[in-house]
Amino acid sequence: MLRFVLRRLLEFVPVFFIIVTLTFFLIRLAPGGPFAAERAVPEEVLKRLNEYYNLDAPLYVQYFDYLRDLAHGDLGPSFKKPTLTVSEWIALRFPVSLELGLYALGVALLIGLAAGFLAALRPNTATDHVPMSLAMAGICIPNFVLGPLLVLVFALWLEWFPVAGWDLQQDKVLPSITLGAAYAAYVARLSRAGMLEMLAQDFVRTARAKGVSETGVVLRHALWGGMQPVVTFLGPAAAGLLTGSFVVETIFQVPGLGREFIQAAFNRDYTMIMGTVLFYAGLILLFNLIVDIVQAWLDPRVRLS
Image (cartoon, rainbow, N blue to C red; front, side, top):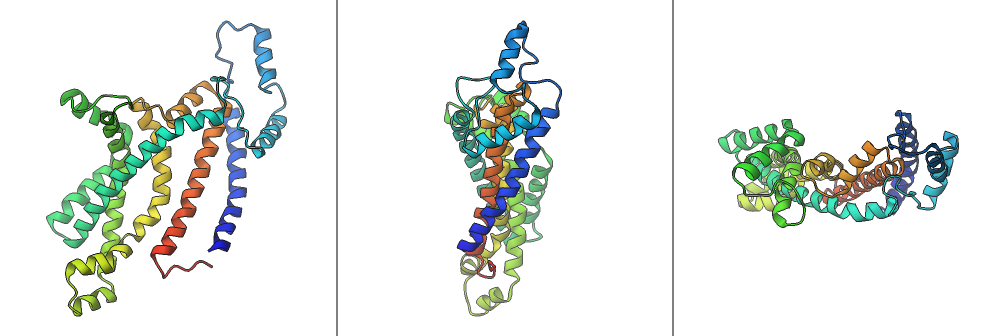
C-alpha cells in the first residue's frame, strides 16, 4: 500500500506541471490584461503597476519566475485585491465552498443511495421506475436551470427559504439541493446497478439457501459490494461538487472560492486564477487517490500491484 501511494504521488508531479503550464499560457492568450480596463489611469501609473507585478517582463521570464515562487509555496498577490495574498484569499473563501460541497454530498448520498437500493430491491415495479425516472430528469437538468427554478418556487412563491446569502441555516438549503441533485441522480443509478449485480451473485444465493433473512442478505452480503460503483464515482463527484459550485455560488451569492474564481476571471486577475485552478487540481488528484485506497479496502478482490 505504501508503494502504491508513493507511486501515485510521484505521478501527480508531471500532471501538476502540465496543469500549471497550460493554465499560465492560456489565460495570457486572452486579449487585454489585469489593468487594461482601468479608467483614467495615467500612463506612468500603468507602467509602474506592470513593473510591480512583473507584467512588463517577457512571457517566458514571467513563467519561470512563477514556477520559482510556486516551488516555495508562494502563489503571489492578488492583482485586484492586494490587501491579501492569493493563499490568504483561498484560505478565507474555501471553507465556505467546502461546507457547501459537504452539504451537497450529503444530499447526493442520502437521496441517491436510498432511491437506488430501494429500486434494486423491487426491480421492474413502480418503486423502481419512479425514482429512476426522477434520476434521469435530475441528470438532464443542469444546476443553472434547477437553481433559479428552486428560487422561483421555494423562495419567491412559497417564501420558505431566502433567495440568496450564506449567514443562516435556511440560506444553505437551496444551494445544497441545487448542487447535489445531479449527483444524487448518478448515485441512484449506480447504486441500483451495483446492488442488482451483487444480488445475482452465487454467494448471495448460497446465503439465501442457508436460510439467511432477506435483511441479512442485503445488509451483510450485498450492501458493501453494491456500493462499489458509488465509491468509484465519489472521487470525481467530490471534485465536481467543489468545482461545480462556481455556478451555484454565483446564483445564490455564496461567498465561496468558486464565486471568487468567477470574479477573478472577469477581472483578469492572473494570480488568483492560477492559484484557484492549482488548488482545485490538487484537490481532484487527492480525491482520486483516496477513492483508490477506499475501493481497495472495501473490495478484497482489488489488488494493488
